[in-house]
Length: 175
Image 1 (cartoon, rainbow, N blue to C red):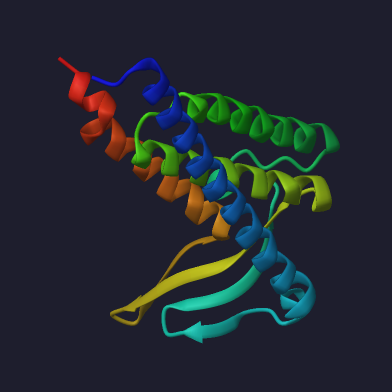
Image 2 (cartoon, one colour):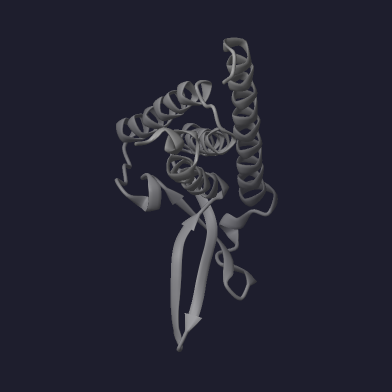
C-alpha cells in the first residue's frame, strides 16, 4: 500500500502526463487546422483525394459531435463553446485525481480535443472539419463523417476511459 506522499506524487505525475497529452493534442489540432485553412487553403480546393480511402474536404460544423445540434446563431455558438469549456474544466478536475496512466492519457486526449474545438468556435464560430474516410464496396461509395484531429483525440480518449473503467484501477475495486 502506498503512503500518502507516494500517492500524492503519483497523482501529480498522472496530472503532468494528462496535461502534456492535452497540450500536444491542442497543438497538433490547431496546427493541422491552420495548415488546412491558411497554408494549403483547402476552402478553395473542394475535395482533395489523398488515398483511395481518404480525402480532404473542408466543412464547418456548427453543431457538436457528428454535426448534431447545429446552431447558427451567436447564442447557440456561445452555449456550445461554454459547454466545451465547462467539460474541459470537469475533465481537468477528474485528471487531478487520476491514479492510472490509461485514465490520465484518456482524460488528456479529451481535454485537448475539447479545447481544440472550442478554440475553433471562438475564432470562426464553427469547428473546421476536414478529414473524410470512405470506402468503395460493390460499386457503392460509403462516406464516414468528416472530422478533425480533435475529434480523433476525443474518440481515443473515450476508448481510454472505457478501457480504464473495465480493466484499470477502478475496475480492480469493483465488486
